[in-house]
Length: 392
Image 1 (cartoon, one colour):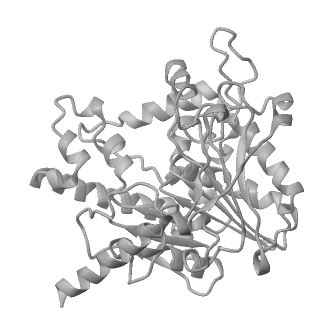
Image 2 (cartoon, helix red, strand yellow):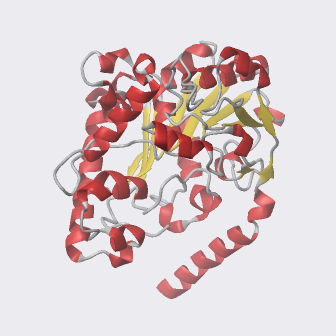
Image 3 (cartoon, helix red, strand yellow):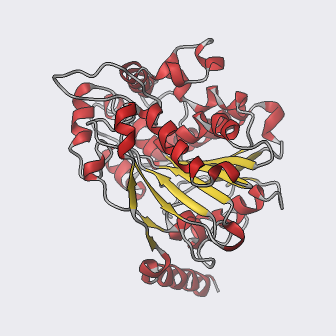
């Protein structure tokens, strides 16, 4: 029976992969040339961009705004490298169109909760989760740190295209974009009508402030450098920056308790990016003893698996405290915390709806988020059955 069940699961996954080109949508890019005059530009001074697929039917006045992720740059050198990266995270001149799949799909069978909504991807090209705003441009590098202006100018354009009349709106984001969706959740709420149903759902954006394998906080220094370089402090919540170092205010556990807007955290307790960069960064792993484990969890030793379990425990503990005691069991807070060794799941069709390994209580992420948004069910799911990382 187990063999048959697993065979059925694999057949489902194969069918999804075969149909990938059919369940994704080809959506054109929009470049905001007028943003250049406002200084709302990518690292290299090129105009910001977004992809917009119009809603239809009952979803014509509903909006899903997704903030693209793609890491950060903490130094002039790393920001210059981003400008020339082929994925366009530093320049819109190098951006390629994203296929709209998973939470972006316009097919009901692949995205039952949001398929007919207006679906937007805010393209990422500033290197600081859309928080930077440095007026001066260094003529030697021509680097512009203007992420906050990009966020504003894209939303201004979308408001004029109908977002201002939204009956429902969901702000999402992946990774560094997921972090941005937390940082800007209340601001997004305030930009829309008081009668609109507005919520936020960060995906893989809950970065935790915990010690690495050396017993230190190496990743904290990285965040501190980002905030300083991009002058991000002015766009971080004052409720946080008034109490602690600005770099710490990039950690959701220190800002989420003050977020008033309903918010749903989608994350893995074994988030692959966090394992590789927060738990076992190169600076903490001088002898590269974690390299094989980080690249493939099947290579992890028993000692490393125990340390991963400890990280999972720290992650969940931090999540509970970061949610705020009064809000953790509130209907305004939702959770979907699985054990996949992955990073970002909502834009991946298989993880969003199809992969049995990524489900909790036999429910896919798509089903749980939709039920929470429409308040059909109050959902806070944490995978307690698999306390070891899974390949999803």
